[in-house]
Structures are given as C-alpha cells and as structure tokens.
Image 1 (tube, helix red, strand yellow):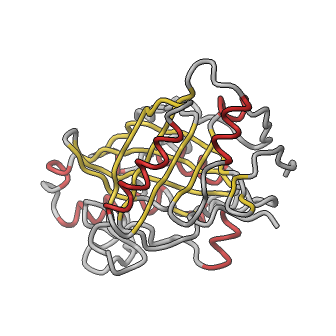
Image 2 (cartoon, helix red, strand yellow; image 1 turned 90 degrees about the vertical axis):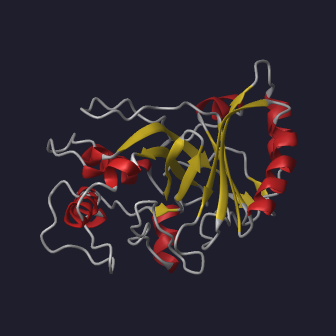
Length: 292
C-alpha cells in the first residue's frame, strides 16, 4: 500500500532545516532517479519535487502547478525550486548531522539554493509552538483522521506550499496589546478568538471554514532567525493546492480588497509549491500518479 511520507503527520519536532535545491545542468533522468531512490524516508525527512524535477523524471501530476504570480497590492514573490527537503528532529544536532548526510548525496546533482533553520518557540513540550510575535501557531490544524484527509491524495501523495515570511518585530512590538490582538484575531493571553475581530485580522482572512471550497490544510511551520532577520517559515501540506491558494489570495486582498493585517509588519520573501510523492518501503514512489 502506498503511504503518505511519515514526517508529514508527525507532530512535535523542536528543530528543523528547510532546504530548496535546483538541478545542475546535464543531470540525467537515470542519475536523478537513482539518487532520490537512495534516500531513506522516515519521520525526520520530507521531500517535495518542483516542476523541473517532475519534468526530468517524466512524471505528470495533473493537479500540480508552480506558485502563481499574484497581481496584488502586496508583494508575494515566487521561488522556482526543483527539490524541497524538510529535516526535523527533537535536537538541533541531529538535524545538522542528517543534513550533512543527505546534502552529500543531493549535491551530486543539485545546487543548494536556500537553507533556513527553524525551531519551536514557547511550546517545546506541546504540539503547537508559537510565532515570534508570541501568538500560538497552528491552532486550527486538523487532528487525527481529519489531518490525514486534509493532506493525502488517493495514491498517498500530497502537495506542500512553502513560504518564508520576514517579520519586523521592532514595529510589531510597538503596537498596543489591543492592536496586536486585532492584527492576529486572537487574544495573546489565552489564544481565544476575538468576537469582533477586524475583517483584516489574520484569523478572519484565513478562516478555513469560510471559503466556497474545503480549505483544510495541515501546517508544520516554524519560526526562524539568522543574521538577516527573523520570521516564520510557513509550511502547509494539502491534498489540493486550491485549499491553500484561496487563503493566500484572500490574505493578499484579491478576493475583496482587504489585505491581511500580517502585512502591516511582515513581508513574504519567497513562495513555492512542491509535489510530495507517496512512499513504499521507506522509498519515494517516483512513477506516474493516477489522476484525481
């Protein structure tokens, strides 16, 4: 039986490393396929394929597409990566060692384009951590079988949206507590949704139950911080990319002209979609997926 990559449903990792690679020139289908099939897939690693990787492998995924160019009043830039790798573990050292191991394999045929280290904040003993604003992240994540149904396609595969946000925390921390709560749509003190949150609040912009389609997604986001700044590495797994895209379009103001208040202190640095193949016997299934 084909299965979802096990790390997607795994909860509670305290450390992660997000990697986006691009194919080297003259990489062949045979070499790339053999390399990918040599990677052991367990709960600590998730792999997604971009457009060029799928084309090289001659795999046509009916519902896959690259992240669109959004004609919005806020910038939502696109990154065209060929391979996405998410390494996660309870210890940062184990993440680093796993990276060295897999990067040695991948670097034969791929260039590392983006590396971002993530971590869990204010919740290392809980399922959900917090964003660096202090607010809980992932509150509306589906659980159990609901999580599985939100993510898994009929063949055990899924899609992932990868988006790096950079926060201006100096600006956010100058907001009054009321303005902070109104920006997010929840009270910081107890994580309860505001009864009369502004339409621009993040909760109202991304409320999964208010769209014409099923917009359930499974988030596995982590805060990040380095010499260039800090923010949130947003990761959303979904059975269909429409589930995420309707939320992003509303957040960007393309549905009704109201822009998500997150943009008042944060900006998107890059965005990409990837296809996450199913696994069998701890290996990626790199064959044609059935049409939905």
